[in-house]
Image (cartoon, rainbow, N blue to C red; front, side, top):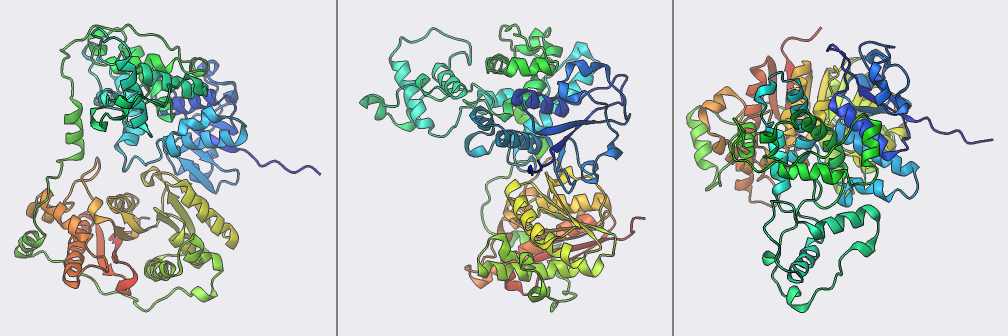
Amino acid sequence: MKKQQPQPESLYLEVRTDREEPALPLHSSIALFLLSYCQSSPFDVLLLSAQSGQRWPWRGSLPETLAGPAARPAEAPGLVRACRMPAVADADGRCCRAGLAVVLRHVVQRTCDKKAACVGLASLLGFKKTCLKACAEVSKWTRLCELEIPSAVEQHLLDPKDEALQIPPAVLLLEKRLREPVRVHNDDKLRRQKLQQQKGRPAPAAQPSGESCGLELTAAMARLSADESLTVSTRGSSDIRKVKTDELPELEHVFAEGLYFTLTDVVLLPCVHQYLVRSCRKLNVLSHLPLLLRWYCRVQEVPGVITAAKDCGMSLFSPQAPKPSCTLPGPVEPGEVEKGRVGPNPETFVGGPRPTLTKLKESGIEASFSPHPCPAWNVPWDSLPVAVNPIEGRMSDVRATRKRQQLNNLVAMVTAMARPGQTVVDFCSGGGHVGIVLAHMLPECQVILIENKEESLVRAKERSAKIGLNNISFIQANLDYYTGPFHFGVALHACGVATDMVVDRCIQARAAFVVSPCCYGFIQNTLKFNFPRSQKFFETLSFKEHMILCRFADQTAVQLPPERRLIGKSCMGLVDLDRCWAAEALGYSVNVITMEPESCSPKNNMLVGKPLTQKS
C-alpha cells in the first residue's frame, strides 16, 4: 500500500479590484516572481478577489500555475482571512504564515526541502539564513524592504502628477544604503585581497561612483556559479598581511545586502523595475540614483532572473545612465526622513534617575500598584498533561519553576474573565507557554498563538500535538499583521515597544488585555509610537527624561543592591503608568499589578486592561 502524500500548502495572493482594471499589488507580484525564480513550487497558489470566479485578462502574463479563477476571501480559511496578504495556510487550516518576508522565506525553505541540490536557492536566505528574518517592527532594513519601498512605489505609480515626479524617500534611503561599505562574514580576508589587486595594477583613471568593484563582482559571481576557482587566492603577500584593518579598502555593494544575491534582491527587483519604468524618461530623477541603476542592471546578470521576470510579465531593460546632476525639485534627504519618522534621537544620558523621579513627584505622579486579585491562585500543574508544563519548552528546572509562577498570574487573570466561545490571542507566544495552558484550561475558547520566529512556533505545535488540543491555532507573522477579531490579548514579557504594539492592537479590537512588559531599555520612538505616551507624562517629561526612566527600569536584576532594585521597580511602575494612562484616554480601565511571588521575575509587572464599553 502506497504511503499517502501530504497535501500541499496553499499560498494566497491578493488581487485588487477597487480600480478600473484588476491589479496585482506589489507584494503579490514579488511572491510570483520568487515562485518563477524557484521554478518548482510545492504550493497550491490561489488568488483572492472580491469578485469570485472572474478570469482576468492579464492572466496570460502570469505563471501557468494560476490558470484557475480567483476566489472570494470568504472561501479562504479563517486564519488567512484574519491576516494580511500574502499568506500560506497548512492543509488543515490551523497554521498560517503571513506577511511578505515570512512567506517568501517559507517558500524558499519548502522549495529547498522538495528539491535536491538546490544550493543556489538556499543561498537566498543569506549568511546563517537570516535574510529578512528580523521582523519589520524592530529592523529598519526589513521595514524598508518589506513595507516602505513597495508602499512608496505603489503610491508613486498612482500619482497623476507626472510632471512633478519626486524620488520617494524610501527609494532615496535604498540609494543611501547602496553607498555604505559592505560588511560580510570574513570581510577582512576579502579586503586584503582587494588591496592586493589594487597594488598589483596601475592606478585606474577617475571613474564614476560605484563603477569599480572587480573583486566584489568576482566573489559574487563565484557564489552564483558555485565555482570556487573564480575566487582570488586567499594568501596575500607579507606586506598586505601587515596592513591594519582600518587601513584596508572598503568593499562595495554588488547586490542589495552586499556581495551576494539574496531574498532582498528578489523583493526589491519588481519594485525598482516598476519605479524605473515610470521614471525612465526623467533623467534628472535617475541621475540621483546611480547605484540603484547599477544594481538593477547587475541583478539581471543573475542566472534565471530574466526568465523568471518574463514569466511574470516584467520586461527588464537596461536604463540609460544619465550624467550626474546636483538639482532635483524638492528631494527629501534620507536623514531627514529617518528623523521625521522615528522622532528625535536620544542624546547621551548623563546622571541617574533621581532628578526625573523628583520632577514627577513634584507634579503629583508616583508609581502605584493595584492589589493582586488572586495572589494564591495556581494552575493545577500536577493534574495537567506533561506537555503543558513549561519544562517541555526546553528549559532548565529552575527556569521552568519561575515560568510556572509567571503563568499562574497571567492565566488567573484570563480565566477569570474569559467566556465560552470567545477568542484569546497569545501575542509574541514563543514556544507557547501561555497559549497552550490557556487552550487546555479553556476548552470552549479558541486560542491563537502569534509568533514571528518559526523555530519557536514549531516547538509550540509539537507540544500542542502531544496533548491533542483542537481549539488552538498558530500564526507566524509580525503581531500587527493579524487583523482578525478577538476578545482577549495576552503577552508574557513582550520586549520593548512590543508591549505597546500588543496593547494598541487590543485597543483596536476593543479587547481586554493582560500584558507583562519586558526590556524597558529597548523602548524608543518608532513609526507608530512616540514617548511619553500619555498626555500627563508628555506635559511633564521630555523624551530624554522618559528614556532615562526606561533605561533604569531595567535595573531590577537580583544581583543588584536592594536600593538600586527598588529604584528600578519604581521606574518600571512609572513607565507602565504612562502606558496605562494612554490606554485609559482611549476608553479603558487599566491596572498595574505585581506578579506573585515577586521573585518569579525581575520584570514582574502586569498591565490588566478592560474596555469600559464592551463590543457587541
